[in-house]
Length: 106
Image (cartoon, rainbow, N blue to C red; front, side):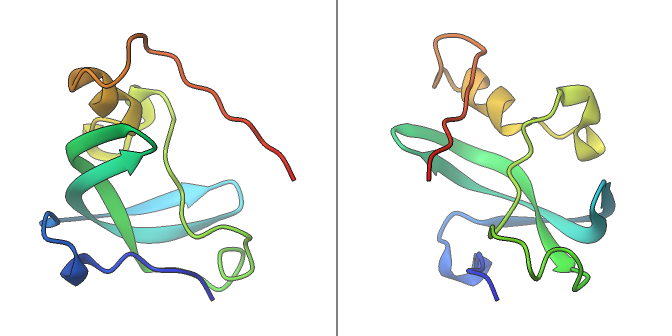
């Protein structure tokens, strides 16, 4: 029901082999770790670690109005101590300050 990331179509994806079970307030899922180049607008982070869901329950994710989750939590909450996307941006000098925001519109 959603667009999916296809690691085999990426020239820069590298599997990690580790897997984790993640619990959210609205459900849980299993992820396998890997790394790839993350691009958001003009920001590029190489070798950014992230999790790919391998076992996703029908509820609530199938009916959710999004294709994935970008973890923006505190580093202490990151699975396996993996650097968050924000940490990756800072480590690779892609941001001037450790600040981010979201703008929601219809």
